[in-house]
Length: 73
Image 1: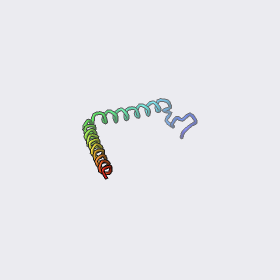
Image 2: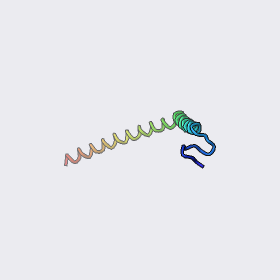
Image 3: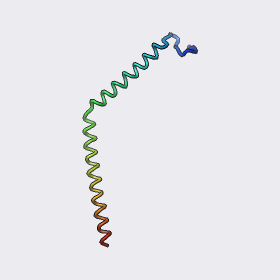
Image 4: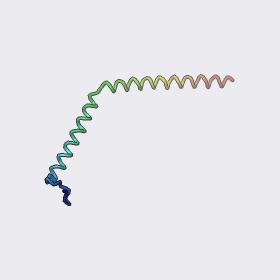
C-alpha cells in the first residue's frame, strides 16, 4: 500500500503533503479569526479580573486590620 518514499497508493506525494499543510493552516486561521471576533468573552474576563482585584484589596485591608488588633493585644 505504501512504498518507501512515503507516497500513498494513489501517488499524491508532495502535492498531498502541501494540501495537508494548507488545510491545517486554514483550520488554524479560521479558529484564530473566530476567537478574535468573540469580544464578549474579553469583556467578561475584564469584569472577572476587576472583581478579583477588588477582593484582593479587601483581603489586604482585613489582614492589616487583624494585624493592628494583634499589635494592640
